[in-house]
Image (cartoon, rainbow, N blue to C red):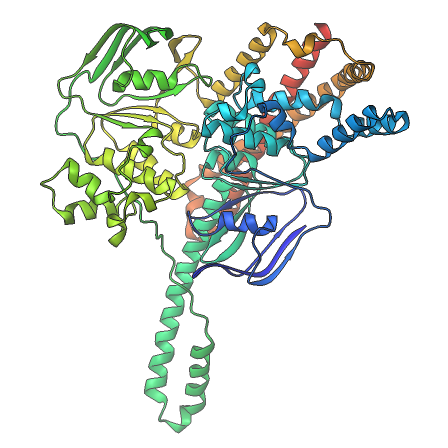
Length: 638
């Protein structure tokens, strides 16, 4: 159990936590949320011992093994595989000791260390590291590349793999999906659901939080408040609490006015003196309840384009890629106003290549591009944040585009993106990644585009800005093509999907759940067709052969329990769906919404949410068990 008791934490003059209390039990998966800059990462540093509280007590279990994802990685010559294996210090310690014992021909010590290595599952460590790398989007050949050869985003993925490799009781993850695509995000989500220890997760991806955590810790006004449930349930509970708080505040204000009026009228009357004094004391000790309000400064939109074309843009028999390498063949695409398209496909399949081709950053290898007379593209990609003038302010960025616009008009516009007051005049170099992303979004919105091409626009954006972006895209009247690992954004802003895979672009007729199943099947096919890598061609040692036989025996033993578990899950799913149907029938009755039945309605809504969550989790478990069963059967038959 982890406990923070009356913790206060200051960074310079900034108060991050004041008398904050939080208890996290063993095995809990907790989402840590709050606006950017309120102290979430500092709380991680407190748990890691890198910061110390100014006041209060932090209780951690003895011998607690903590794994965390570093935000930076130095350029090292170590291979990606070795770097990931370094995440397990116990394994490295035994390996080094074993090498020393073998050099000294200490047979007794060698036997002891081999036993210890087996306890640590050391014989399968390399295989597990390969699986982590594959899950996070690395190819088999990447494993032997030097860390320094990877870009910054891919190095962060290596840090994540190293953290997952670490043998731990508590896993601290700070924005783990920021540099992942949708495929890797889904894989990570499934991995974390199987993790046996405790997790504290900082994320602004609501679907990711919904599918991983069972509690939410909300850092707000220097306090930590714990909610049971995932992020969607937190939203409902928080809204209800704010509504109750507002009602309590209004009721309290009325009571205060009554007391003050009584005191004024009867203070001088001896017969009422005691009553007046008691009410004065009541007024003094009454806790002032802060008025509930939604204080998000983000409420932006994409301004209407002055003119529009039909169609806006199109590709015909297009080959996309580079002169020496064609990535996409025979692409045919027509974009009409109102088109809302999400791009799906494995990492490296060509989603970004297609968007760069549409925006003109990459020329067609062959084929035709048609552009409407009034086409105006708004393009968002991460490299555009780097292209911002670091010395210029948000206001100056827009002023350069529209010299005739008044400062007040620009200030009002920037205010909807959260740049209030003097923030609009600050140089961009002082901004965080999230603030720079808001500047880029503001520049796009100001230019009145009629075609939005957006490649991972939510990286570095917090939940409030993501919500505002979702609403803005919903009301955008032009065409939209979106690549994102944020499934909530995809579900709520696009109405069709294109699948970019195997060198072609085709219509994907399913939803995101269907895409997740497609991914699983696609990976299975790739693994079955993949040539055996060199490391598997070498002769196995006696210990490795023994381990291989043990694993095969274990697989056979697992078949029967898996089948029984599938039957249980099917029965549970039928039960949840039956109960959910009953609850939804009750909710369809108009009478349930009468004031006199508020409590009954609240209970039914909670039951509905619980049953939906249980049904979804059970279905996920069924799919995972079914997949595991099929893979085991294939391995045993193969």
